[in-house]
Amino acid sequence: MNRPITAPRAAYDRYFDTAWDRAWFSNGGPLVSEFEKRLSAYLEVEHAVVVCNATLGLSLLIQALELTGEVILPSYTFISSANVLKAAGVKPVHCDIRSADMNIDPEACAALITPRTSAVVATHIWGAPCDTSALQAICDDAGIALVYDAAHAFGVRHQGRPIGGFGRAEVFSLHATKVLQAFEGGVVTTDDGALADRLRLLRNFGFSGVDRVEIAGVNAKMSESHAAMGLANLDMIGETLAANRRRHELYADELAGIAGLRFHQPAPGASSNHHYAVAEIDADIFGLDRDGVVDLLFAENVLARRYFYPGGHRSIPHLPESGAPAALPVTEMVCERVLVLPAGAAIALEDVRAICGLIRSIAAHAPELAARLSDTGASRRRSARPDQVAPPGFSKPRTGSKP
Image (cartoon, rainbow, N blue to C red):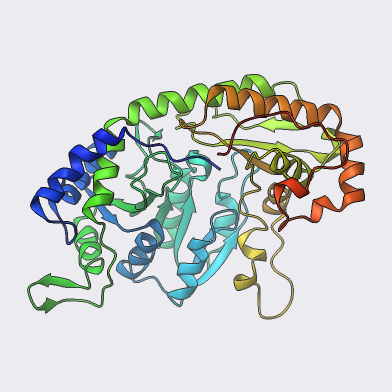
C-alpha cells in the first residue's frame, strides 16, 4: 500500500486558516469552489463536481444518468463499482480484461451488450488509459452511456489531453492513498453542463435554493478542510508526479532480470502518473506463487498486496443465485499473479532498494521457501500477524518500510 502524499503542514494551514477565519466549513464554501475551478482547469474539462468520496460520486452519476437494467464493468476493479450498481437496483455484468494492460477488453465488452444494457463503466486500471476509442464506438453503436472509473488516473494524459474528459463523465478518487489526495473525497468530471447541474443537486439533498428540493438527493458534499488538503496537494502535483516516476524507474531497474517476475511499465510513448508499482509472478518460473511472496513480504513488514482478489464476479455479493460465476480466464489469471508493491512519492528510495533486495533474495531461494511455507501453513495466513508468518530459519533483511 502507498503512504499518503502530503503537502507541508504550513501549506495546508494557509488554506484552512481562511476557512477558520470565515467560520465556513461546509455547504459549498469558497475553498470547495476554488478546488473545483482549479481541477476543471488542470483536467481541461468544463465541470469538476467534488464530493465526499468517489464511491458516492459514482452512485450519484448512476442516479443522474438514470441507469437501469444491466451495466457492464470489468471484474478486475475495486468492488465498490459493482456494489453501488447493485444498491441502485442495476445488475453488474462482469467483463474480462486484456492481459497486456489489465483494462477491460472491448471485444468481450461488446459481446455482453443486450437490450437491457444501459451503460459501460470502464476502469483506467493502475492509471493506464482504456481503449477509449474502441469503447466509445461500441457504446455509440449500442446507444448507451460510457463512463470511466478514473480513481487511479489523476495526472495521466491520453490522446493529447488529460484523463477526465472521456465518455459522459469520469470519476476520480481523492482518497488519502491516491496521487492527489484530500484526506478523503472524489470528483466527477464532465463536459455535459446539464449532467453537472444534476450532480450538484444530488450531492446536496436535491436543494436548488432555500426550501426548494428538486430531486431526491443525499449529502455527498465535500468539506472546506478536505478542499484545503486537496488544494495544498494540487499546488505540488508536478513535484509529486516527478517523485513517483523516480521511484517507479528504480523499481524497474532493481527488479529487472528476475525470472518469473514481470514488472509493469507504461506502453512506449504512453503517459503515466507512476503511482503504482505492479508486478506479476509466474509461479512456474519464479518457483513460488504470488501468495507466498506476499506472505514473506508481510513477514518483513512490507505491506505488498494482491489487488482486486478474487475478482468481482467471484465475490460473495455478486455470485449468481444458482450455478457457477462466469468464466473470465484473464481476470482469474491476473488475480492469482498480481503483486502490488509500496510506491508513490512518500516512500523513500532506500526503502524501494531494500524491498527489491528482499524480492531478489526470495527469488534466489524460492523453491526452499515454498517448501517451508507449505510446511508451516503460512500460505493460508490471511488473518495472521506478519511476525507469525516467516518460515523457520528465514533471515529477515531490514527494510524500514511501513507503507
